[in-house]
Image 1: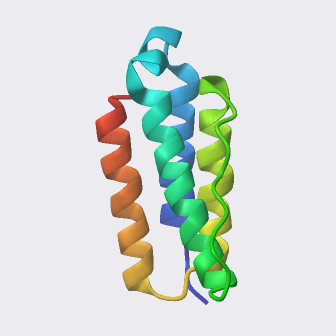
Image 2: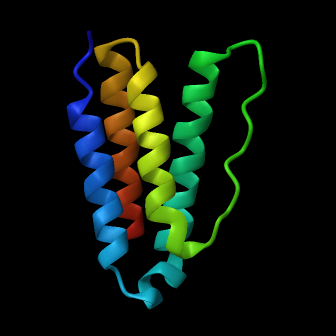
Length: 103
């Protein structure tokens, strides 16, 4: 069984940083970056779980929900990842998104 603890920890850290960020930082793009990451992680999980269906796009629930959205999407993906390569790729996505969000 694949240990996805590093991914859930990275997602939780990013989410915590978003929750602690001032509204102005969220408005300047941090929330948009988080939503983009959440959508990417959610689509990836859906492609693994149901490859024959087109992934549904995660809705924009507003800037204050972005942290929860990456938490949910990241944990969903962690449950279905199949190997270390995918885990490393997911970690890279989270780390790069957090840097772009500047939180």
